[in-house]
Structure formats: C-alpha cells, structure tokens
Amino acid sequence: MSRKGVLTIISGFSGAGKGTLVKELVKEHDYSLSISATTRKPREGEVHGREYFFLTREEFECMIEGGQLIEWTEYVGNYYGTPRAYVEEQLEQGKDVILEIEIEGALHVRNLFPDSLLLFITPPDADELRKRLISRGTETMDVINKRLKRASEEADFMKDYDFIIVNDCLKDCVDCIHQVITNEHYKTTNQNAFIAEMKHELEAFKEGE
Amino acid sequence: MSRKGVLTIISGFSGAGKGTLVKELVKEHDYSLSISATTRKPREGEVHGREYFFLTREEFECMIEGGQLIEWTEYVGNYYGTPRAYVEEQLEQGKDVILEIEIEGALHVRNLFPDSLLLFITPPDADELRKRLISRGTETMDVINKRLKRASEEADFMKDYDFIIVNDCLKDCVDCIHQVITNEHYKTTNQNAFIAEMKHELEAFKEGE
Image 1 (cartoon, rainbow over the protein chains, first blue to last red):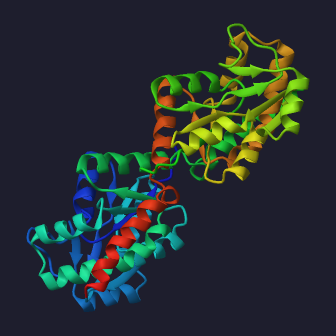
Image 2 (image 1 turned 120 degrees about the vertical axis):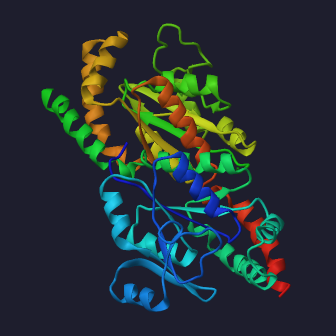
Image 3 (image 1 turned 90 degrees about the vertical axis):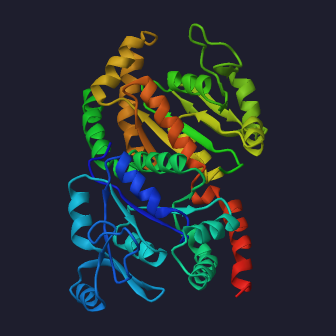
C-alpha cells in the first residue's frame, strides 16, 4: 500500500445519488470528505460546514481572488468550489480524500492532481434518472428539466473519467467505489517507493555474482 | 459490467508464487487460464495440457513459424509461448482470461491487446524472494542464483505494469487480484457500449425542450 493519500473525484448526473453514496462511503470507511463551498441556498436539513460551506457571492468571489479554491464553477446560477487547504493537508497525511464535484471542476482538478481518480456515477438508464429527480421532490419541474437537458450534455464527458459506476443498489455501489479506491493504492504509479526499495535490495544479488 | 472479457497478464519474479496464485484464482473464480507451451522439462506432478503443453524444440519452432503464438521467448535455455487461438476465443465469448507469462512476452502481448491488464507479482522483499526459491527445493543453487540475478534485471520493468501486487498472504493476494480484475470491467474504456446507450437515451430530453 502506498502511504500517499488517493484523491478521488466523484461526479455524475444530478439525481444519480452522489450525495447519499458519499455520505455512506464516509460513514462506512475511513475517508476524508472535502467540503465544498457554494452560494446556493441550503436544502432542508443541510448544515453549514457539513454538507457545504454556504457563502454569499461576495465571500465566494473573495476566495477565488485569494487563490483559495482548487476549482470553482457556476452552475444553474450558483457558485460551487473546493477549498484548497484541507485537500492538500489530508493527502500529505496519507488520507484518502473524496471530492464530490461537477464535471468541469473535476477535469480542472485532474490537471492540478494528475494522479487523482475520476469516478462517474450514473443510474442504470436515463428513465431511472428522470424518476429519481422527480421523486426527490426538492426541485420544480422547470429545474428538473434543466438538469435532464444538462445531463444529456454532460454525457459527452463520461469518457474522460477513469471509471463508470452504475448506482443501482446503494450498498453494492458503495462497496464498488471503496474497492476501486482501495485498488488505486496498488497501481504502479502509487508504488514508486516500493519499487525503488525492491530494486535497491535486488542489486545485492547482481553484484554478488 | 462490460461483456468483453478482460485479458489479465500475470508476471513477476521467479519464486514470487505466481503458479500457486493462478491455480487458486482459477479454482475460486470463473477465469479461463491460458495454457502456455514450453520446451522445458516437466517438474514432478506437472501434466501435459494442464500446467503446460510440453513440446520439443522442433514442435515449438513450428508453431512460431505458423504464427500460432501471440508471444514467445527463450528463458534460461527453454522456449515459452502462448497459443493464440484459445485466448482470442475466450475473450470473444466474454470470459476473463489469465495469462501467466514472462516479462518480455507480457509487454509484447500488451502491444497486441492494448486493453490488457498487466499485474506484477512480488514477494514483500528481496530476502523473502531468495528464501522462497531455496525452500521450493526444485532447483540447484546455480539455477537459483541465475534467477536472483535475473530478478534484479527484471525489476527495471515493474514500472511498465499496471499494478504491483505483493504476495505476502496467499488468500489476501488472490482476493486482491480478483478485485483488480473485477474492477477492470468498470473502467471507462470497457464501458463504451453503456456510454453510447446512455447518450442515446438522454438525447430525448435534449430534443424535448
């Protein structure tokens, strides 16, 4: 296992169940969850500093200007962004960090952190996506239609992710994501220290001939 | 899950325990094991058509000339190679195929099958490798020393593999390999059919606006 933390970026269609998945992942396993900043209004039950840092536009723009966000975007009229400090601290401490962010932000973070793991969460089909958005009951039909149209545009970016994870059964999906992140530690690019040590030790046999 | 089989290539230091691992993988899970052809002498208990196809040099060279091997190499004075027909048939039928082959052959097969998964198996350290080679008791010290020197050269190719899997505990290692192969099906490159279908379905929402 590598000692460096893995940065996992979770994106997907609005309505794919990302929020619930991420909550379960953090509850069941030892992940550090990056908390995003946003200017959107809190939904019922959402708490400042837990689901999001709920900021005013002025506060958010101040963080952009100060370079305190590793990514930010404007989506359906609101800002969303990821504070830099927490992510970098956790990775340095060897903790696996999960970021749940929109696609544009995800691709931007991949440029800043080339070893990050990009997971795209999707329902099994488009009809199921529509049903989930409606049954959530927190949005107007106008917003739901906007999100569905957006999903059809976002589908073009699925190919830029490392893995496509279908969220059909919550528990299976959580297990699958946890396994994909766990395996990331075995990737050769995360094993440089082990490879160097093994090569060093084997040198002795070469010289011994 | 993709319907196309995943071709997994397992290599590693001689003495890393690849043979036992592969036997367990095939026993515990539904993998198709590619059987190599070789000109080396059978070890005690090895059966023609099970561990290897044991061929004469003349028979082996005839397969090379006929293009019936996807890779072949000469190692410590013997030929080793992979018959083409079986691998291609199994992958087309959606079966996951495991190839246990030497490094040169592995890198050659990766060129022929770019989506193949390359796993490098290693003991936890060099001293353990030496101990395992000695305790196997099937080789002379001269052959063991040759294998150790070879290992120090082979270590340069660890970086060309996708994953480095440490074989410390057999069961954990089998589970780990099985999980890495399972996850391969979720990779975006193995989800082209699903992505195309999802995009097609979502188009309806775009046009419906």
